[in-house]
Length: 430
Image 1: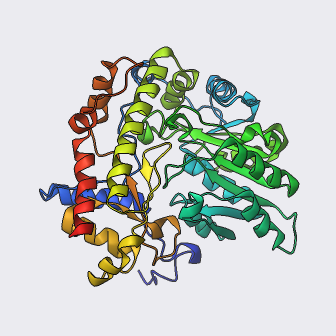
Image 2 (image 1 turned 90 degrees about the vertical axis):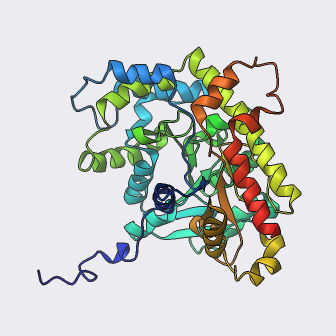
């Protein structure tokens, strides 16, 4: 065929590569297939199995084959609304819930239908910006700092908004906490202040709270408490329920933004139609919850908290700039204290840093550049999930809730994670 491959592509996708998280996972599998020992800190996938009651619900409804409503199964939307009312103490109406094939797809639809600016603090999840690029959308990056715990402050947000000619043009601010890639969260006071600025300038908040139930102390607070009329809560089964491959995400809107939800649903009806029926029925069980699911979550949080603190201490003691994780299963270390030593190894940016660690120590991480940080910044994301989740959960179940995990628990059940951290330290000191 006489087709010019490059010029036949939409200009917005020319040069667009595969998502870095998926690309690193495929590379890890390739290296492991060659017999190499790899510590996979690259993919942000829950190490834990899907809770048994949710698996049983999927098995029970595997025969469901009919198309479901584009906005989602009624029982699922009711369960999602109830989940947010109970967990987040916010007003949530089932008529204002939209179900999609993963929260990633819902975020893409939101950017597609929204006419306005998208504001994203960095470091940020790897797909916010590429989605905007695909759609040709204007996106504003607000760079945060290690000293600010990678948080956007209300003052920094106000400064950005007041620098615009039209103070009240349509905008969406994306908040993600506990954060990917940093594992940190916002305090209630910080959220109140951000909510106040958002209300003043009539900004919509997209609050990506997919890791909310993995707050290590079980103390997640939704910004929707303080700005209910302007906040969309994003959640799903991928992280707290360990069901990333099931692809079920949810957006919960305030009544005042139902026009935005309806526009997204209209586009959904012309694209993916509806989410897989068996998955939606299983989702009802997940969002309704049970004592078994609560025990699962408590145990998962306990393991992630203790492991995260151990990894943090090992890196910090070696001189790495890093914050102790507060939720999810991530850390975002800054290796700048080693910049001179790394420069002698010809490691001058985050991509080089991660490539050399993978080649020389078998440690797979994602460079800070993937999270929209300056390329020369020596940052990277560590997903400390290189352990067998079902085995660690089973072992944790034998330890009463009122007792701390014994000192040797992490060494026994998360050995590869600790070995990977030690490999990083050894490389830095070598």
